[in-house]
Length: 135
Image 1 (tube, rainbow, N blue to C red):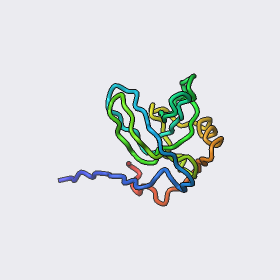
Image 2 (image 1 turned 60 degrees about the vertical axis):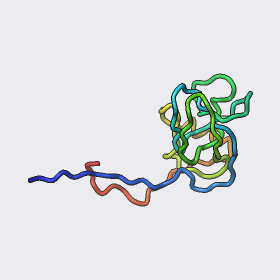
Image 3 (image 1 turned 180 degrees about the horizontal axis):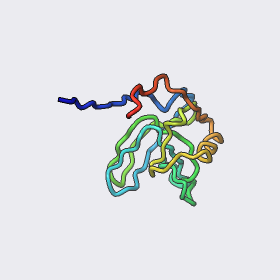
Image 4 (image 1 turned 45 degrees about the horizontal axis):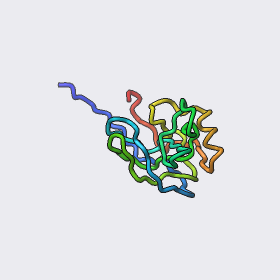
């Protein structure tokens, strides 16, 4: 009888390589459902209310289209509310672990915007690779 092989990739890496500074602020969830904000999510500082929002490439007001911080851990926020978070404001981050809350791709242009901040995205060679080419 043939056996079923299950492939499990374990990823215990972090977005943070070096932390030089962080900010304590409220992260706003404007969605009407509870939302998970993942580690590595790019955040922006709202120009009027001073709170953190997910960076949005399509936003045209309130500086939400300017990435300034990186969330360094997962946090779930109830619908239409906010939660206190600590976000990276300065340091080195693993470029491949940066993400957009909208689910889009973090492009070279977005990474370039982070360089206007004291956040340095770097390419990290992973210490190991999958030894099973079928995964």
